[in-house]
Length: 432
Image 1 (cartoon, helix red, strand yellow):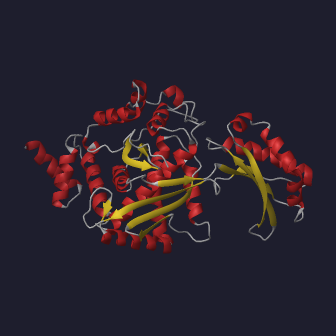
Image 2 (cartoon, rainbow, N blue to C red):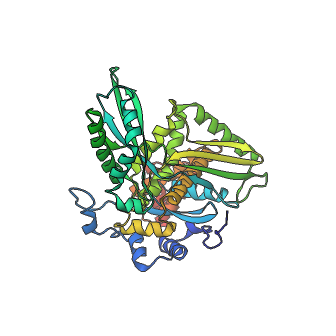
Image 3 (tube, one colour):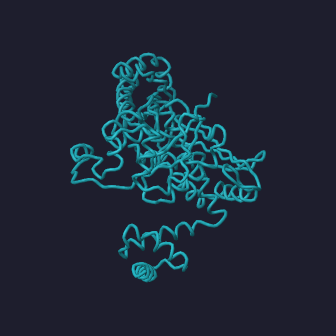
């Protein structure tokens, strides 16, 4: 693999110490943003009301969340500064920290499959077994021709119909039903519109050929064929440093990982941590994060038992993490071309290729899992949560933005994060 990470470096030391205006300037230099793109990210009016009114129904205004940037990411030899929309600052800090641990050489390795989505054609009263299978075999060429003729742009982009198969099921009352899966390569789109229309067209054809009534014709949000596999490695060394980890710490992370692999109660929380990172990137880039969440959790239970999506093992002097996750993401269509901040986010990422984008998103999920597992296995998660709680309490009792860090530091030094302690410290700070 040819490395290109020297062209753009996501190592921005001291980024978290900069002011908001200094941070956005640093990101602008990294990505080559113009003034309009800077305004879209930094301004509360980054989403004009005229655009917002056409994005949803009964619109009365806009709702803001913080947009931040995770640094240090290197995926397949390329460096990324990753936009994240989330209200919890520890997520961005944790992702950046773990990305630094995982950035040696080519960084996080990621491999994505072709972007194949599934359209389902449902037969609530299926024809006898073998009929649908025979129809598909005899008419597969005609199905391809009919489904593709109404989607010339998708075909021109290299996508299109990729096959079909029959699944036989039994409903909760023991009655048989059948489903035909239509497989569609959607290229850089999330694919819902194309797949839904193809499923409807296929349903009409199959009903004509079999005489059976068709029920639902709809996209599946479990994209089992559209996945990303990521692997990250941290070298073990007693002398800890950048991209290094103490062997005892790595052993505790493996121990915690095995717990999540064995226990669904723990696995849900571990996977929620993965999605903390993934969802934050999806919000910043205008994706259907609800669909991605549903798919990830369904995939975690795909073999009949819910388990952790990521696994960590100590191997050959490294802590090695691996994750396989379905990701149906789009870089064209939807709001990716109309929301100014979303357009700017994609420019910062430096790609409009959906597969490469998905690889970065999966890498963020793996890094977030490493950071959270490390915190749990070492000092525990509560210390970081108490800092966040102290910050919220300081704001609630009226501390000004420049006073909040001082109040938080004083509260943590006292090991008290209640409102009374916050008021006492704020009063002391204002007097001094």
